[in-house]
Structure formats: C-alpha cells, structure tokens
Image (cartoon, rainbow, N blue to C red; front, side, top):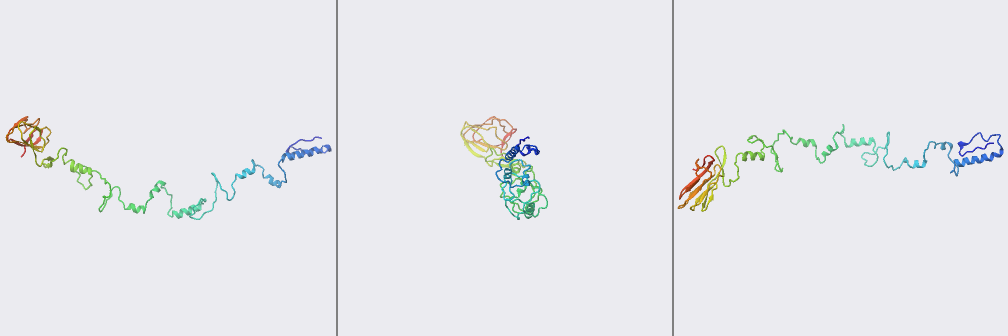
Length: 311
C-alpha cells in the first residue's frame, strides 16, 4: 500500500489508507497523523476550551489579536490622546447650564448657554471680532452716548462750549477780509489783522504806526538828539548837532518813506552834508557845505523827490 506524506491537515488524503492496504503499515499512518497535529499546533500545551464556533471568530484576522486590542480605547474610563475623527453623530451627555469644564458640550447645552447669555440674539451677528472688541471699555449705552454728541458736520451747537482744557482747537483759516461769524484761526488773525495792515517791523525800533487813511506806515514820535564831533553816517530818527568843524555827515541811500532826520550846525562851526545818491526836494545836492547855526528837519518821501523839510 501507499503511505502518504503531509505536514498540515489540508495535505491529508481522506481516501487513505485503503481497505486493501497492509495492516503492518498502520503505524506509519498513525505517526503521520501525529506529525501533522504537532506541526499544525506546535504551541498547544494544554486543553483548548474554545468551541469550534469561537475558534471560527479568528477567521479574517490579519495580525496578532492582543496587539490590536491594546491599540483600542476602552468603553469607559479611557484617556484618549492624539487626533480622532468621528464620522456620523456623536452623543454626549448634556451638562448643567453654566458648567465650565473640559467636558464635551452637547448641542442642547450650547443652545441653552446662548439663550442665557445672549437673550436678545435673534439673528446672525455679522460684526467681526475686531469690531466687537471696540465695545471694550464702554461704560454705558452706546446709542445714548452717541445721541449726546455733536455731529462731525452740520451740527448746530448751542450754549457755551468750553475748550480751555484742550491743547489746541483747530478751525479752518478763512480768506483774508472775511467778516462772517466764523471762528478765526491764528493764521487768519496774522494775515488779516497784522501782516496786511501792519508794516514790516525789521529796523523800525522806536517808531510808531501812522496812517494816511488808506495805508499804515512807521514814523518817529520824536527825533533823538545826538551831538557829533567826527564823521558820522546819518540814521533815521536822529537830530544831529554838528559840534566840530570840518566833519561830514553822510546820508546813506537806505532811507525809506517817512524816515526822518535833522541836523543843525553849532555856533562857530562849519561842516559838510554828503547826500550820496539821495535827492533833496527833487534835486541832486551831492556834497553840501553847511555853516554855523544852519539847520534842517527833513523827512524822506520817495526815490523821485528824495527828502523834503518836515513841518
């Protein structure tokens, strides 16, 4: 007869041994069966309590069961870590209103909190987080406060407005000559009240403002007396007493309209007045000799007429 060979049950031939095989070969078949059993279950050292149905549950398992079980979360009391994706609907208990823990919030809890904290919430809030943060620090009803404020443009303010606590109050600068009720800026005051009416002040020390009814000008309230005994350059506003002979009083070409000066020659002296390029009564005197007791009180008119005697 033929003795088959096999290591695992699926290799055994159920047609062997045949009924005509020699009985003496039966021990070979028994040894074959032991080999198949031990090869198939090398780690079985005791009774297997699982039923055939229970053993069938391992069908389809692709890796060690304990390793897979250790990677799963327990039904209760499990501390889950990492990111978890839950598809479908997840049910969690609805915590008491006002609870502030790490417990998951149910939709019922969220709605109850919204209703309690935002009782007037009836539509979506379209303000951004930045815009909502603008209310930080507001201490009263915003509309009530706004209603008590003046508009940026077109507001009619009533009563007395006190701006003394402000570092600066800015108003538009009106055109020169404006005579309306508009507030005047400092620039308007400077341009209207001074710059256009008050003559320039450089070099006008000691003078006062006078007017011809149309234009303002500078003039000296009186001439300052000064005795000279050496050559001197005349300056507006002085009355020179020539107190030495042979000296020259020079009149520079720097006098302007209404500038006045005077000279007189002391008793017993003679001198010269150098008019440079200046005119005197529409004439060009050049260098003029003056003698004892001669005097003149002069005022500058313009480049055409030069100096004339003052009244």
